[in-house]
Image (cartoon, rainbow, N blue to C red; front, side, top):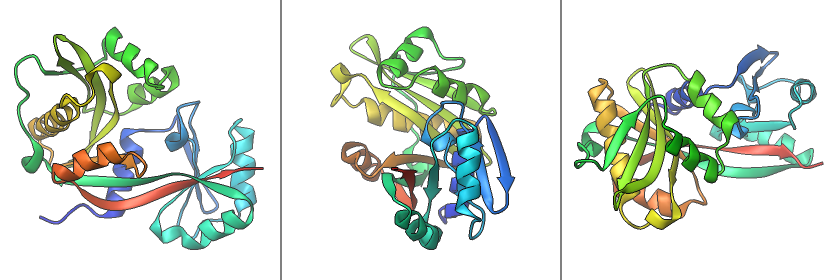
Length: 238
């Protein structure tokens, strides 16, 4: 069973974690993130891209600092941005695995899929640095989608967000409270996410994780997920 193509997973990433508004203009895919973070605010080249100044001006007009998301095919643009003083942020990998490899029905009362999210889920996200504008990203993502809440020691221990596009479910915004770390919460959520995707008729579970998050990457790789592609951001440092 061949892994999804890098371009397909990048599309799933954008569809399941959408910007407020996206505009294609003269070689650019430009995003108005409405404060929802880098992923929904960065410009991406279409093909070879266009004039960098055009994209910069558009982003500044939205009140955003110029920011670009670049993948393996964008080496020429990456070098051009480096010459302009742009710094690298958050090198990230997109990983995927067949749901049949990961799916496991969660043990009793250990994981629930709930939408819209409960107040305790919103609180955990907020305490982990995911404020209201990023919750708004989840709200505007198309169905099928759900929130995940894990329980350990009879208390809420972790949360996540799942949405599907085609045969791929993408897992976003996974957060485990400090007191519940190293208690298997991440594994429960990963297997439960794949189980939910399987119940929706999905074939693949995918996610994006920064290269610096070595603990999460070890969990995902140990579960059998494979790196399909990479991206990073370039931000205007001037």
